Image 1 (spheres, rainbow, N blue to C red):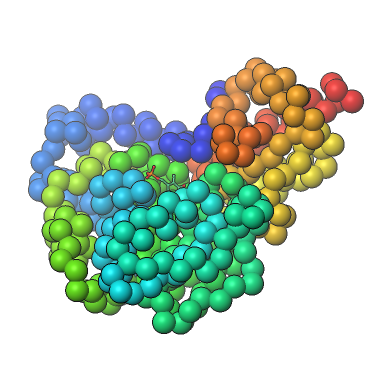
Image 2: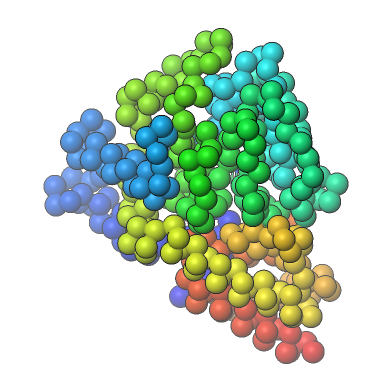
Length: 355
Ligand SMILES: *Cc1c(COP(=O)(O)O)cnc(C)c1O
């Protein structure tokens, strides 16, 4: 068995792969592949409707929030958000908590003014900033709820009186949050939800239509809402696999149940990092991510040797991002706790052998 700690694209439930593979050959006994169905057929419309309904149910969204599945990665939303929400004379507030936040800021500046209200840059993004003010005349406030590369996460969401926009690509559906308090949420699918190539966008209708700019048809969220997320051909296979993953999540007991499991996985690994003399975490304890666990070795010359031990144990994808070095273990929803135990045992074994 392979233990897949990849940061993204990443592990999905085995049964989802099984069902997706069957549907590629013969969808629902139709004799057709899911890949050759017209997107306007009743069969595919049922998929899109169920996927959207499952998002609403699992996130417990109210009727003011619309659910869309749109083309492109989360990086597309870095520009589509300000294109739809920010006039060129207005200012948006952004929190800079890592690589993805920085990239979102760069794109927003193409459409209007940006005030970076806090940054973790001086500490190489090992903390989530605490004391900062968000101007209450800013058009919206943008945060990245989980910083996939540096391994930090907002444990307490910084709600303010202005509309809140969040990139939740790497912790969507991993923990209970009051999603209705957000005006716009987006997430690339490939971290916790499905295959790459589709974005989930949850948007409160009332924040749209307030700017003067002419928005290209395909970029305007309102057109997608009006067409039930079928303005053009959606990424049908990606949406289908997202639907299967959301069904799986519901069968596990939903977000609250998976959150418990995610906490158990993160606690198991962080406890080992904190007690094993060979390792240390890179992020302030209070701000550690439960999805992406970043750690290094106290003696970096041993890292190669630890990595080869983990390879022997079929542990995949724990090399750290090049900006951080060391290791990163991503503990997404579909990763079983037994895989974390295998990693923790490898760390113990390494420590014993080198003591
Ligand atoms: C992976 C990731 C992205 C980028 O997603 P793409 O699909 O590659 O555009 C953006 N934000 C966060 C938080 C991510 O984890």
